Structures are given as structure tokens and as C-alpha cells.
Amino acid sequence: MLTEQNQFITELYAEYFPKLMIYATSVLNDTYRAQDVVQDTFHEAIRHYDIIAARENPGGWLMETLKNKIRDSERARRRYMRRFLSLNTDIAEEAIPSSEALDGHLEQDETLVLQLVEEALTPEENKLLKRLVFDKAGHLQVAKEFGITVYASEKRLERVRQKLYKVFPERKYHKKK
Image (cartoon, rainbow, N blue to C red; front, side, top):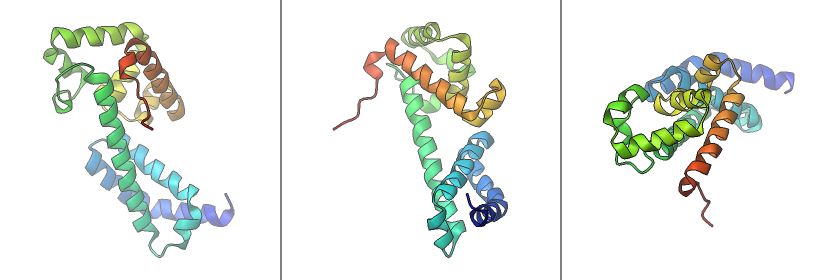
């Protein structure tokens, strides 16, 4: 990144980061996920410097990008919830707020699904999955807890998904043509 670009992004970050964090935290009710989406918003600003620099209101562009990132984050969270929490169950996502509360609501069928998931994964992978999916923690928070990078957290979740696809091949996502 050129010095001029670096200066522009640094100024945007200093001016808008607190505002974007307040908005994202209020929508997501999770500081760590809010940090993830706000950081991702600034990453987009860096990638699209030529577009944002030409804007009369770069703050508006950042806010719209943040809103899109929040929608994407929520969509991804719901997708994970559907895939890994409600495998062959009738439990609504809202009824499963955390991994601790889950145990009291499961029927025998759901317990079998969770048992298969736990058997397919290592204890550390189970912990990672529970933190990301059940507890709705962001990759930044999980990365700090596990002492790894955000990228490593994302990659580990991807590997967990691949393992679970082997256990539940009927749940594998196939792109429609």
C-alpha cells in the first residue's frame, strides 16, 4: 500500500472505527464478532481504496459495507447452526442459546447426533466447534482463547466441517447449477 493510501485508511480507521464498533456491537450483541466484522469492513476498504477514495462520504460507504458484513456474518452463523446443531432435529435455533443449555433440551435422537459429532472430533476440535457454533463466539475471540491466529481458527473450523461431512454425508452442501 502506498503512503498516501496508508494515510487515508489510517485516518478513516481513527475516525470511524469507534462508531462502527458501537453499531456492530449493538446489532450482534457480541463484542468479538463485532470486532471481526468491523475489521473485515476495513479490509474491504483497503481492497477497494480507489472506490472509497473517490467517494464524497467514505463513512457512508464504510457503514453500508459494515451492514453487508453483519448480514453475511449472521447468515453464516445461521447456516452453521442449521448444519451442526439441528441435524435431524426439530429444535429451533433460538431454543439453543449455548452448549450448556442444550443438554437439557435434547431428545434421544439429538443426543445420538451430538455423540456422533463428539466421537468424530478430537476434544480440541469439539471445544472449537462449541465455542464458534453453540456459544456464537467469533474467530478473533476463539483465536485468542486457543493461542492461534484468526486464519488458523477459520482453517480448523473448515477441517471440522470436512470431518463432519464424512459422518453426515447427506448434509454436505452441493452447489445448484
